[in-house]
Image (cartoon, rainbow, N blue to C red; front, side):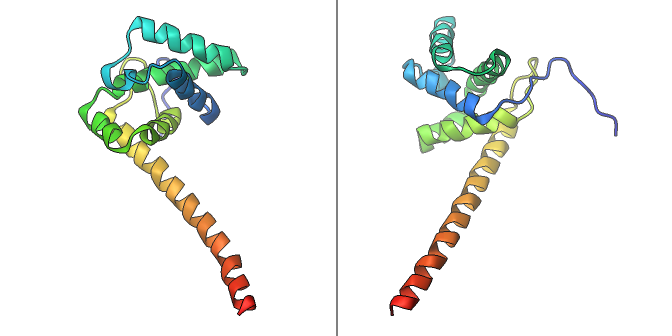
Length: 149
């Protein structure tokens, strides 16, 4: 199989940059963009907030912002808005993490259904991580209870 390089594909982003981009949206008071879309003024305010706090490489910060704005566009899909309304702001953090690693083409944006599948994978990975921590913590507790009895 031959790899195809599309010059309109956007590089993957790191989780810290994506979290900071989401934080900039919230701190700027522009969380409504996930429901109504972003206007130029929203973008300016959020990006100013992002660059005030971001201290990393400019290219990585720019990639995170590009991915954020395409996520905002994808969030206009009814299925994604329904998930957001049902789960609240916790959903946004999961969606941002999914958007960090999902293929993004600047002509097509994020496919809403692929984004939903990616969000489900992030949730599943978190559940496994939490389950693993719970099991690791419960063994010493159980052993301590046995010794104490």
